[in-house]
Amino acid sequence: MSLPTKVKIVEVGPRDGLQNEVQNVPVEVKVKLVEMLVDAGLTSIEAGAFVSPKWVPQMAASAEVYQQVTKSPGISYPMLVPNMRGLEQAIECGVEEIALFAAATETFSQKNTNCSIEESITRFTDVVARAQTESMRIRGYISCALGCPYEGDVDFDVVTMLTQSFHDIGCYEISIADTIGVGTANKAQALFEQVAKVIPVDQLAGHFHDTYGQALANIYAVLQCGIAVIDSSVAGLGGCPYAKGATGNVATEDVVYMLDGMGIETGVDMDKLLDAGVYINEFLDRAPVSRAANALLKKKAS
Ligand code: HMG
Ligand code: MG
Image (cartoon, rainbow, N blue to C red; front, side, top):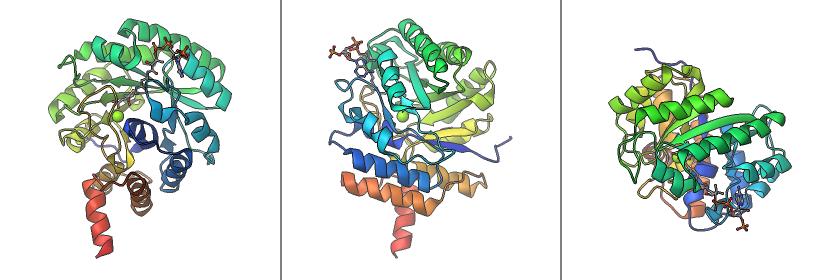
């Protein structure tokens, strides 16, 4: 068993997390959250999405969020882009990194982006070609890689094919996502082992939701395959508007607690991360869902 000595955490709370919130989160709250996460030591923070506001109203003011965040050197602020229209907005805002996404099942692809898997490949190929002329860094996501809310089991060959497509067109990293959190450790490991046979493992990331309480087990399983990039969401924010039952992404606090305990470096300051979680939970009027955050905050208060 070999484990990485360092893990990069991609913080997706301000986009993947907040996109599912019904109450409007004002631009200044999102900006402050992103800046607190940078202060906590996170180096890649997905700050918003240039998607249709009719589809995901919460992301409507993403251009303002991106523009108002004080950019720190060496930090990436990827923005989610579904099509050419979204890319044009990213270009107008001077975005340096975008994230594209495709789904591993036809039904989810239709529900999430109103197109088939094949059409999504054509769409993102065109978007990448244009984004490369702007020297953007491009990340890819494969949603529903371990299960689909509409179709159930997912064919690992489709996940592998999509990952290969993202890789071949020039994504520097592809995040394989268990969007509805149904995966378990052996299955997660089998999928990542299969994909890592065709894509260099240092270009893969794991993105787990904690719907069934399996996220940390799945992360531990894929770390053993050599995965050293993990997506997570401060305060466990999240879900997906097109994936019924998908609760939050794994909480960044839980991931950092586990990795700290394993002696794996993340560069994240837990106290400052807790502050960011408290800030957004207070705004949303919500108790922390992160078990680690809950315990650490109670310990601090006692
Ligand atoms: P569509 O309705 O097929 O689009 O949606 P269209 O091209 O037919 O255009 C319809 C209207 O939308 C037009 O406006 C366009 O201008 C507008 P109208 O003429 O009616 O006034 N439009 C846009 N507006 C703003 N930004 C755009 C844009 N594109 C078109 N980019 C579309 C197709 C892809 C746009 C839509 O399906 C969409 O926005 N989908 C995004 C859904 C989404 O954000 N889902 C959540 C993210 S994925 C996720 O969370 C999973 C992930 O995090 C991994 C995980 O957690 O597991 C990645
Ligand atoms: Mg997610």
